[in-house]
Image (cartoon, rainbow, N blue to C red; front, side, top):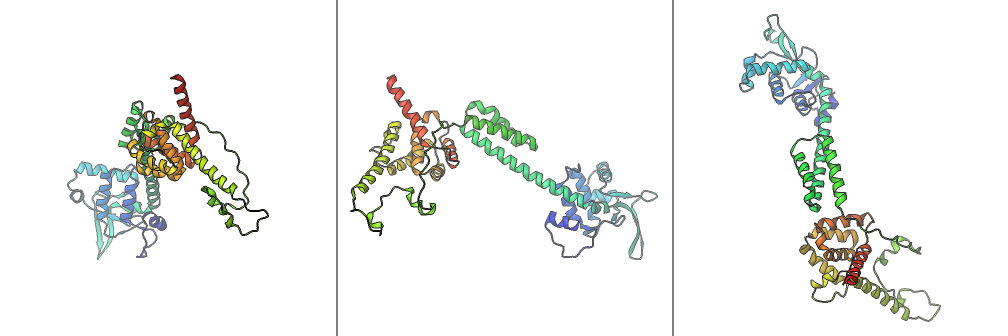
Length: 380
């Protein structure tokens, strides 16, 4: 029991209390946390607190008839700021019925004590020792109540986050669900209600989140001759010079192939950018000059994002998830179909989530825009 008290309230025991005694205020605090389980109202707990103030010691013993207090109803009513006597009797009866306190009645049902010298030989009134005897149950119930409260707080926050996410992407057809979730959060819902609402919000968000066109599987990469740590530098395009190798060359050096490789890499980047410009001609209206490099595309994407309603932290998150090149491509593609996107910030945030899961590529977006452009040209 002593360990349960210390765990529940994180207190040490510097006074070396006797076994079977508990701090009366710790017990009252734990009982307050677990009031719902014991069906105690705050006014009943107030009456119990008033009774505890008449016990002079802080350590409450668990032995029967060892913690009897005998205040009159008038004294109790004064300490309870004038509570009506009928109300006081009702709450005293509730405490007795629950077994938190017990009565020890005198023959005339009066509350008093007989003393011999300075010691109390016999007392009649309310015995508070059952509170100490039920300490283990009270502390356990308080811990369970604390865990339930924390769990409900997490569920409430989860529903609030999902509601805000739906609010960012939804239209007027979701007003009923948004209003129901708002009203739920204003009440004190149970765990089942919060879990059910979270499931409904997730399903609605999933139904409104745009799905990417399935992309063809990428070809398997050839086996590399060195460990991964030695090949991290190959993430960026680079041209290796012959002077980097100290091994003798079996044949005469031939620089032409290296120059050709560098041009091929630049041509590939230029062709990728050209494909983006063919698929997204709208971007040229916002950029006075010609987009010559991916650095230009990255800068124009950063300029366009606030105009489209995309906050800088969202763009930075997308850059971290998919790279600056793909992030710029995604923003430029979104500009092309901006009229069909309700919340560009939420849309880009969703694309970043897919990129982290390895489920995102700009190729389907570009191909879809190119096909739409071709159909428009044929129709005209």
